[in-house]
Length: 479
Image (cartoon, rainbow, N blue to C red; front, side, top):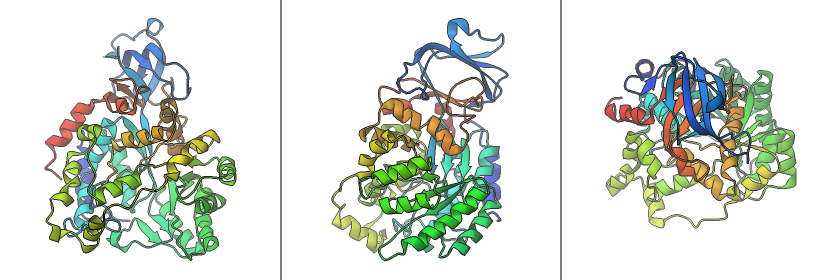
């Protein structure tokens, strides 16, 4: 698969993205001294005060009480007294082909009269270095991109080569039950598949690029043959499993989610949101050891943008890409005649009445059943911004009944399972990769304290979020 226009210049931009980013190359030895270490892998266990963490190169060498963990001679010291230390956070559901602004999904929000979709896609590609940085500035060191065009694989390569980027797991185009022609510019993110044979053929093309997942967008509409659709999902899942990778499925209705599990789903990237989960679903999910990603905020993001109610949060003002923030109110400032008739009609009617939030109601029962829950935002969708959207998502998880220790577990240890890297990331302990964050405020007290990141460490490289964001703002006018 060849690059689309501007991709060569994008790759060059990514390779030089470190300039002004506030990153320091991994020193021979670095010691984080005197912080309070929280262990998400031990929910309910007290935090350890006055801890020293020592890492050399990209690995953690020692973790222990400061009194009995000497700092090696010549080590770089980061004073962490009065601060909190956590594993780097992980978002288990993102899409880099989308930006989060109002123009990124013309199939859902028709605003192409303001910004043509081709221009939006070009901007997204050119802006990848900034998008990578906002994740690090938000304390996120790993993300799972569960579906996009074939250029997703080039994005993964760019992230690997950039010093200032999170770790990225990736899927290619979504095997879909429905078509989305508005998103097809020659390298579509969503491909309609009508038979198991076609599903296997698409899987073969994707597997040639060595994805971390295959993904199915399991959209079941009234009158569809669920058994026939399940056969397509199974064909995709079988191809994934034969290649030693996992099947991620978007399935938001209870019956559809059960069908996905029968077909071999390993990751459910959305909640069941049409009715309460039942014993059969819980048993099936446990038997498959499925990862359940609630993805609670994303529908609200669309609704708030479409009906004119989206407002940036305090963390988003500090940590979101300023170019995207500027785009968020572009629809509001546009003359009415620039709005599409469909969008104008929806705004005139106003938002529909909020119904029961079964996705919220289902989270606690899923957790209590022993199903692994991983925090994920679906970032990139309209209104769900890359980076600081995690704080909206985790607040909704708390509103749904999870405790802060449980939420932190979902965003670290369980996220490492989504990445397929549980042996290397997700905890702060000797031998693991040096992916950790140092916070100015206690994350166990409230969600927004997680946004006050003093330093992010990814693979032993230390980043100052303030400097990362400054570098983005200084380069704001450049593509």
